[in-house]
Image (tube, rainbow, N blue to C red; front, side, top):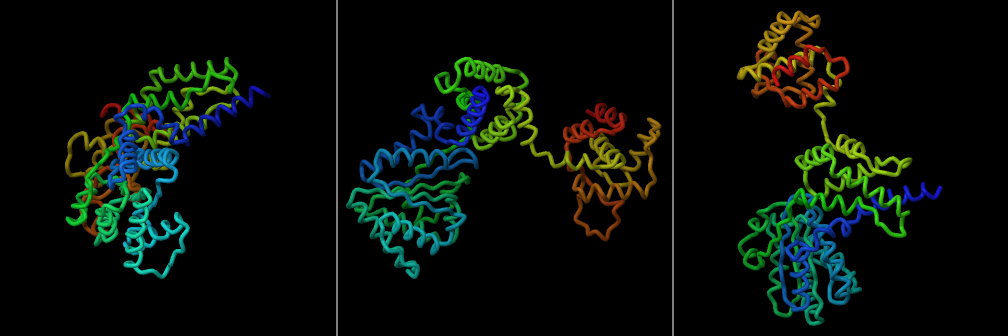
Length: 419
């Protein structure tokens, strides 16, 4: 019973680590060149030197911009508990200037235990924000404005950004504006009057390298060899994890996943699925857990469509692929039927259907969006003569045929020959 509890405890520990940004990003914080170190230095300098600053955090979604910022702000709140006030806005919720400034006033009132007026106008809230910046500056307290989806605030008249950055020009104010955006040209969206007041400090967040991703894997999946777990169990668990990481099959699967999406967000999703597949009877991770996680995460809607196709529809898809390989630019129902007849005559297949049946199967493939028309003519035109193209790759079609239980051997032969 005790051993079972250790297995459950190990599973819970791994899951909690994956869901804890501070633990996940810890291996990447050691370097002074990390974005964590740079961002913390910028904000802490503004706090200690009583100066204003504005920073943009740019990078693709899932690259850790918000997570790193939350860690930095959390650490600074511990170091300077009475010198920071944090105001958070989201461009998805507060892109309207009136709504955004009202939210700023509401959060400032909550932070400093003041009464908030819902009926206050834009000018009233703007004057209140300027007054609060001056008061906090005199009290040596820095207000940190976090603008998520910063590019949304750069739409329209940009009155919020102008009011905020203009108020920061005063020597009595003390604030830091941090914008978060997945658009690398976010600063170019600013008006001239706003851009002239912006500090133009930018940090670029990129997906981790393959080496950093492996460091995160080892950091997250290794159990502590201390009194938390039985020594033999922890050592054996870590040894098996190392064996998996060195396994050639795992490296191939892991590289495939990184090629699809190498962001930290998706890496953690992959790890969480793999850990959740761990067999509690053995209490150890296996390569099969990661393979299962990869298969479950990999979205393959076209393969799902292929599973529900008829044999005739598979023939039509393979014939279209053969025409593609032959570099036949014009491909319509008639040319597909000609290729279908050539296959039947060459291999004497038993799967040969009438033209009207084939036309219904052809239309079914269009409805499933496995093929589509290449022209813009209306649906009143004759389907048989309109050019079409495949919406499924050779690899997907080949994989779909392998997964199709009753797929004729001739189709595998035709695809192997074209491959």
